[in-house]
Image 1 (cartoon, rainbow, N blue to C red):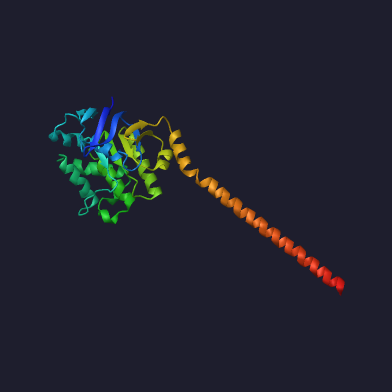
Image 2 (cartoon, rainbow, N blue to C red):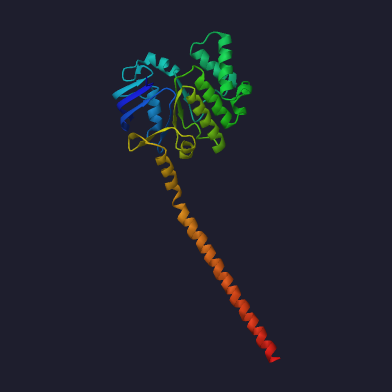
Length: 277
């Protein structure tokens, strides 16, 4: 059974159409990339899923909630079933990792202290950060902070995780680790939707691909379009580099030729001088 169904949905921001005729579904355990240029509607689509942006037209159902009819008091119930991973972390800077995670559990109704401690330990272990619970956010690297954010998103055992450019502020190697973590989570049955503009990560860690372009959401048939898009970005460089290499090689050949001619000329002058003596 699909966790999410959109049918002919139109998404607006300040009365401007961002996306229209949006049709897609998300299944349990499915890893889906959301790609597109900046401003193409990726973040707006994610925000519509957790009811940050209202849906005015079409049919939209997420985890059993009808987003056209959802009441304000029901939105927290929806969001408890969705884990959200932000690009800029949004950790509470005045408390350590343990208390950041404890804050979420307290806010979502957890009461038993042993259950709270056990759950925090479980999620930190899952993201490889079990020994960092006492650290303050400023004492962690960007990659470590993002792992804590993923742990926070896992606390209430969500059926769906939304990750909005989770590698945007990270170096390439750390970004790869974060995407690998998210794929492992999907393999355990939690659906993941990850917005990104990093096509190399999409190519390196294959998954379903949806593209926001020209106010539409279109599914990429397979990985080939991604590879082609990457190669197209690189194509203009190759002829230029080849031409540069050819020019350098030709210049060197001409230099060698001049040196040889000068050598022959010097040799003949010396021979003439010896003959005159």
